[in-house]
Amino acid sequence: MIQLKDINLVFNPGTPNENRVFQNLNLSVEKNEFVTIIGSNGAGKTTLFNLLSGRQMPTSGEIHIDGENVTHLSEFKRAEKIGRIFQDPLAGTASNMTLEDNMMICSEKGFKGLKISLNRKRRLFFREQLKHLDMGLEDRLKSNVGLLSGGQRQAVTLLMMVLSDPDLVLLDEHTAALDPRNASIVLDLTRHFMETRQLTTLMVTHNMQHAIDYGNRLLMMDSGQIVVDVRGDDKKSLTVEKLIEMFGRVRKKGFVNDKALLSAV
Amino acid sequence: MIEGIFVEGLIYSIMALGLFFTFRILDFPDLTVDGSFPLGAVIMAVGITSGLSLFYSVLLAFSGGVLAGIATAVIHNRLKVPHLLAGILTMTMLYSINIRIMGNRANIPLLRRDTILTRAVELSGGSVSEEVVLLIFFVLVVLCIKLMMDLFFHTDMGLTFGAMGSNQQMLVAQGVNPDTYKVIGVGLSNGLVALSGAFAAQYQGFADVNMGQGIVISGLASVMIGEFLISSNRISVLTLRVILGAILYKAIMFLGRYYGYTINMTPNDLKLISGLLIIAALAFTQFKKSEKSSGIS
Image (cartoon, rainbow over all chains, first blue to last red; front, side, top):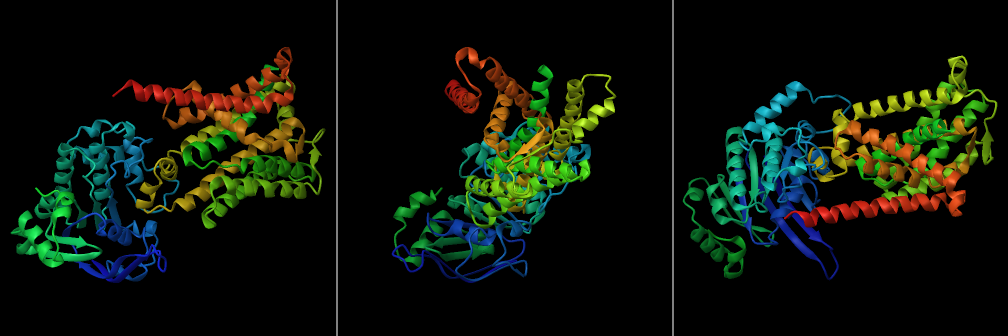
């Protein structure tokens, strides 16, 4: 499904500020895999997503998605196959427009022409879909999205993303900015959608327990490298303590600083 | 006299609708307008004096505006120039182009020429006064444009434009190329502005290179006055209030021009008044915002 081949990424090459983010990074993800990714700040998780979505071009190396070489494809073109959700719950919706307008814009990817597609049938479909969220949003199709809470907006973003039927889903700490109650609602929805629809998913999280509970493969990143990669039964038997121990063994350094950041438990 | 205010307001409201599109919906402050307004006037005047049919002259004027807008958007997209600078570039170049189109002259008189307006007056057969005919004519024209705009903003493309001003990243994530939409949006907007210029030239009886000077400010003032009048998020109301704002703006300018002498004002002060109007509108919205944020939570 996804193949990263010998990815190198250097910021400000040849200057005192030179920053090598990735050196010969290789990663391949199978179809229908649900991969959780953890790592401390600056490990390269978000940059990895930027590379996949096309916001950041690699210095060298190749990126293949679904058998197609997308290394030099621009972000909006790749977006037709990728659904990405950001940490900021406001990033996925336009606050000055109504819920139904937002859902309409996100219904079909690519260039939008002069059709009027928002009709009664479409509204009924949106209502049906919004019922799955169980937030009472099905009666607020005409409300401006700006009036919804962060949790509701993120849930709507998730729903719209799923409805667009992407080949690859990138979740970039999409619950980190929500309060615990809303975060768990959105996470449950995430699990529900990803499992029922069998979507290939990469999910970055700061919460080790979530990384263990969700998905069928776990990656841990550090300084631009994938240092832990577990899947299948190995992943099922993981615990937070084991993860921390694995990290210490691989990096031969303490976890003291990162422990707080990764917010174990 | 009162008809005059309405007619002028309606003519300028076409320009204000174009400005509303770029400034409010696209969030693209477009200064091309100062050049595309006279461009429309100039093309129309040349069309009329050279004997081109009125229909084709209007069409050419509109297309000229669209091209000017496209030029600005392409400069902005391709050369990564900030939108303000891109607009100023096109506007400055248009000054020379407008003079070229007129055959190295600074203005063209249209007196005693056959224009769309004289046709409309002829059509009425003299049953009502000329001013009333013009008023009815422009009400119909502006209504048509307004309804077409409302319809446009209900299409998939129109909705996408609506989201563009507030969240461009969301559109990129939907596989939409914002650059393409900027070209379409700024192009259409300037088409409307040029159309407004074409009508203004026929109404005034001449086209002049300088008739676009400061037009951005008057359009922006119209949009802002409209926002005072009604608050809504429905597109049909948004376009309506731009039109009302443009008429009200003309009325204020009219008062300034005819009764300003009582407070020692001259017509030269009108630009100052326009600017002050905008500043007042901005200050008022600031004030309302701070009141809102300190009120709750």
